[in-house]
Image (cartoon, rainbow, N blue to C red; front, side, top):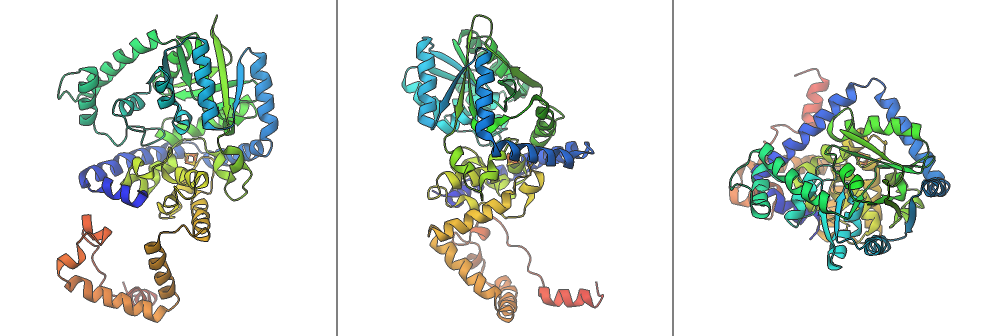
Length: 456
Ligand code: SF4
């Protein structure tokens, strides 16, 4: 199923769709207020884009510098060309330490690599420790958002899940009660785990350390309590200097959730006393993306989720409708590059309104990328036949303004007079769940002329 079919499933629950839309819009508005509170916000975005472009243009050099500096701090550095190699390396490290329980946090990269099922098949218990990720893990679901993994769920859903798996009181939906239950459950796992795996928001080339930003402090427990700490990091996460970090930390939390800074911004520059630290640098298609001048800008992403929160399509279709690890505009761009055929519907999951580009702290031209992906999909002959016919018809109509005006008049006059079943049926995706907008009494041309003549 492509995005339209899965989105249709999501929107069948009108109340949930509306609630999801509002919840994300609340976060988007918080982001706007936080951004406006920083007078030099646009300069920061400009600076972030420049640092990223500079780093990408010399990525090989910065990665080697990162590796050398990390090794000098006693960290083991591994390189993984694809997801399978990454998973094998993690398994090998865990088996070498006879670890059977791994606590994991803050890593969409391990989702991308499909690490959990592979480790579980090899007898290793994996516990996701971000609250949202643990909730979706218990439900055997994938995160529906990169920052808010369980945003598709209401507190009643969480209560049912916890009652089933953590034996909390049935029907108790109190968020504090549920959070405390999750905390007690996760503490036991943290204390028992032989290994912790974290992702990383940034790798700093000049120091060889990594930085992890969280709000729950779970990455700190996972990295500090067990003696073994594994870090999975995409190669694009490297930045040149420690001072560059200031630009990104000021942008990241404000763009993500509207907070001035995440509750924890933790630096890991070596193993805990008597322990071992491993960093796995993962490519998994990133080099190919870097080599493509049209789409390489999407590597500048710092995974704040702002483009996802603002996207009118994401807000109304939910993260699972994308069928790719990362949803929303950035996920559509990355997914379409990764597997054009499998994700051919994703670039169309956008209104091309440009809101994603406007909020992106790294100034990625997201809507342009989605537009370019559409061109590539058409060229590759992968476009949906029905959509192609409809677009060709629309294109032809736009080239004939008189006919366009006439057809507008026909629709305006005819649709309100048609029997309801002809408009509101399963063949009309718009009319199936919602009332059609009220038809204007006059054409745009007439309205435009009136306006020009100075009438209201
Ligand atoms: S593309 Fe930009 S807005 Fe979207 S997640 Fe990445 S950095 Fe944030």
